Image 1 (tube, rainbow, N blue to C red):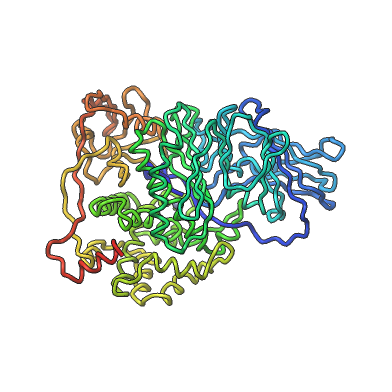
Image 2: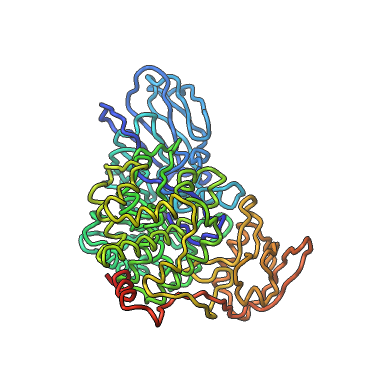
Length: 623
Ligand SMILES: [Zn+2]
């Protein structure tokens, strides 16, 4: 998963990836499920699930509480209404709801099917209660658009997660489907998909849009690109050249590590209006990704963000989709156990999403250094003296949850430091990519590692220095002294004044100048302890000010997200009126938006670097 606009506490959720429990079963009849996108009623979709025959006794039906990759508790069952169980004569059976996500039918032997209405989550995002992160959420906007993250629509029967599914979808004739699920069309035009087991239902979202997806080849991978742009601002063709160039570079970077043959990018562009998606970023799947971004971003910014976000999701094929622990493999959708290795699942992935761009020449060295510095600064918003292993195991615990988004910052930096150690010890020949290749040779989609044995195994495959590093900075809680690693590769830190966005430094570093109170996410503050940009200092804002209102919009989390979105189209002449509370007093700050700059801590080549350090840097960044 990648949460873009990761303002510390807005960073939503979760994680994990993988498969359902291995239940042995002899039944071969698929669970027949149908979704009716034509007969929607009050923005709801009717779902029918026919499980085949059951023996005597009660039967439990579940909708996921959480899904792999999200690292949050979302209770998708809360969007289900009017669930009924029907016997073979069409009569209702007794059914009891045990909690938001599970139902029990007492007379399983007579159960023919279960029917229910499903509401979408995008509509509910701005309604107060915390909705799922949009790339894991659902949209029902008949007859124009459907985002089917199927865990929001299709449930499973307890212990039957390993049975095959047949999914029949009746959709408006004008819409085009995009998904990695294999399927055919029925005589009546309905879509008929097959999934090997419940996990494959969750792993293969479907997007229905008015325009057909664009397809292109990247080596032997067929890539589909489906775009929904509610105001017709963009088409899939607009993003095709940049996505193709990016994926070719990723394929070149990974070499033979990846065996995917199909990949679908499902992009949803949000109007950011009241009933629309507000969680920007993406969620990974084995052969697809769902991306949600603001429609009002100009094309160059959207392309740049897409490159960062989609490349991150595609690299998830390496981990956790292939290399992962038993916790991930035997993922329990209603009672998940968390693995200790977010430093790898999210950290290595995010590190690769930056490293491949410099190694494949998509960005300049200076851009890469700026990204690293951005991550160092962003990581300071989190607890730097917290064991990453401890955080990872406990990430669903509300006490640890606010630290989750540091996986994209410090998680990536842990991998950078590890990469430099590996290059140094191997005389430049091996890095984190080589390590992941070695792990991929041992572990795959169906072969998990033991969570507690991974670090020992990595040390055995590499060098004793790697043990010290993990013990001290990943298992242990000692902050990393980045200067020490930069010195090894002949880099030094300094500062200079650079262009800045209004509330976020820039799209690469994503460093925000505002922060959210983790215990009350509707309280937004100007960040303390960092250098603010000239826009905020020019208005007279100070670190610690609580922002109450901007240009008439009341500042809650959603209000702030809306203003951040709008600020992308501000010009230097835009007038800004901001009300803040400082020391219990309300103060109105007014001025022009201007062209903000900010002091940037800069990483760059040390003119006095030794030839050995320069050679190590070349091995690290150029291979
Ligand atoms: Zn991720």
